[in-house]
Image (cartoon, rainbow, N blue to C red; front, side, top):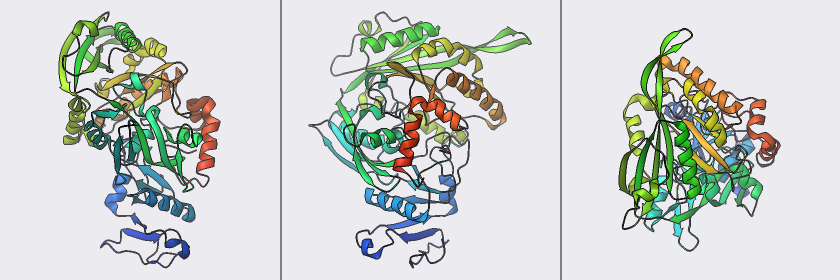
Amino acid sequence: MNETTERGEKREQDGDNSIDSTFWPPNKALRQDCSFKIKIDRSPNAVAEASRDFGRLISGRAEGVIAVTTPDELVATIRHANSTGLSLTPCGTRASCGGQSLPNGGLSLDMRNMNALGPVDLQNATIECESGATLRAISEATLRHNMLPNILSFNLDLTIGGILSAGGFGANCHRFGPMVANVKSLDVVTGEGRRVHCSPEREAALFDAVLGGLGHCGVIARATLALRKVRSKVRLWSLLYHRHEDWLDDQESLIRSSRCDYMQGFFWAGPQLLRSTPTGFYPKAQWLYGLSIGSEYDGEAPDDDWMLADLKPSGVLAVDDADTAQFIDLYRDRFVQMRRTDAWQRRHPWIDCLLAPEVVREILPQVLEKLPRAAGDGHRLAWFPTKHLPGLFSVPAGDWAVAFAVLPTSIEESVYEETLAALDQVRRMLWDRGGKAYLVGWFGPMDDAGWRRHYGERYDAWIAAKQKYDPRRVLHSMAFSN
């Protein structure tokens, strides 16, 4: 933009000429109803931050940042983009790993300051929150009433808009499904700049397109989340397995008996052994499997024998008790330690794939054979029911699916290329067996054929939704070319 905008408005000076200012709407008669002054921060620091995400795998091309604080400002910004030909990429904490929240030559739409919370609705067991509100803020508000959202993701510092635009898996998704299955209603600003209230009963097509849609049909302004009553404490059993068959059997047994409130599966490389191969002896890892199961309680803790009945672990490593507020923040230290070291600044090619349970059983040994030691030990899986999911949230066929994640803490530059190549082999193996990408992770370069494979019979509906709700293609990112 020039020193003076097309509409005669003077550009604000901030010392380094990094803030452009303009107004929406251009019609002066309408402008009386809009007091929001759109500011585009083009400072080098803002542009650099908006051009990188957690993955550090690719660089975006942000031309500036627009930060909104209210739904009305969001409407004004998207309408302004429609009138001027600007493109926008919504973002919260940019916790994605493949460019999903990075602009491709456009502006970053920063939602973090649009973070108001409504009161807890005790009668309907819901809370209304704006897109930039974090799960930490939401859970602190609801715990005052002994309530929590039906499901919480593993990282409480993510924004609700970002989570719902991806999916949202956590330790109790075997009970409630992902977070996108626990939304009562949304206020969405479409790519045209229309603000629409939607739910499974009203404007359902938009509701389905936005949940898990990564902001490519519309931007979530507000969400009404389902809440549940919680008990004050959690007993946590940590189990060890040497056989993946026993590990998977016990998880399936637990979800069908419904006797645990929380369940997380882990796997990690144990001791290395020298094993014979056609080209000589090479170190091979002995893989170990962990299962963390939890049960909420007030008063007397649940009986160990009752919880562990019929399970087949190699051993019980620990039985712990924690306040529920402490338990839901289980992974905080992991992220704190990553930020304290240079691990946060390194690359994170996280693979998140949704698989049929029978595929996990069959393919897991082959996947572990391919996983390099440099990929670390943060890998996990979580089961979830596939009913009540948004219509465009792509999952394998069947009543249950497994969220399978390979989560390197970081990758050293010296082994980055070879590690990425090995992880790409794993990713292709999972996709070839009918896996669906959980779109917050790294899924490599995608062409039209790749998206057709991902969405399957939903592909045409996905394309039609984009054309309907964002006909001028205002909303886009590095990860999507459609």
